[in-house]
Length: 202
Ligand SMILES: Cc1cc2nc3c(=O)[nH]c(=O)nc-3n(C[C@H](O)[C@H](O)[C@H](O)COP(=O)(O)OP(=O)(O)OC[C@H]3O[C@@H](n4cnc5c(N)ncnc54)[C@H](O)[C@@H]3O)c2cc1C
Image (cartoon, rainbow, N blue to C red; front, side):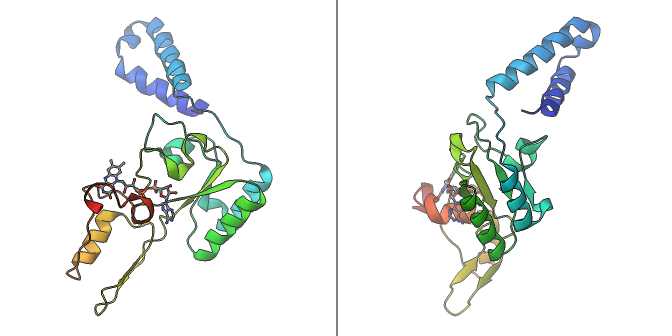
């Protein structure tokens, strides 16, 4: 965790233990616990090179890429499994095929790995590079949610960032359905590539 996240954790814990207001010494215990908590979470900071930062910012626009810093874990990394310490070098939010290609080119040129993220719904944090994700550039597909279906062939074209709950809703409007499990937050990207032999999707 970053210093500001540590501070917020301390404030949060402080509010959980109102006794600390009566006994200021407890505030020290709360802060100590917060420090221990952060250490035990195993958060380490990864620092993408400035050249990689510049390349990614040019690829998708500086407002569509996030790097390690305050609130990075909470607002952009969003680990599904909090027991796995995933801290990727960058999270990018491209909105076109060309931008995806540019992100991949940046990663290749700067010897970083690339991982797609659709729903981010997996126990291994694989879309974040797993436990060793510090050299990983994530391609978040949240901007890829297009949907179309041919009412003759029933072939549907679905953006990889679409979540299964939305896929179901959109197919249902055309009287169609697909087999999948009970978690509407799973992304079609991960589900269609590696997730379909789990549960009722098999
Ligand atoms: C609690 C839970 C319940 C589940 N229940 C079911 C179920 O009922 N039925 C079922 O079939 N599955 C189920 N799964 C498994 C799920 O389908 C897989 O974990 C799936 O891979 C999640 O996809 P995602 O896009 O949400 O995850 P992500 O983390 O975004 O992606 C998972 C993996 O796929 C890769 N990936 C994502 N998008 C793409 C893409 N567009 N192109 C290439 N690679 C991509 C990522 O890089 C990552 O390695 C469940 C998983 C969990 C955690």
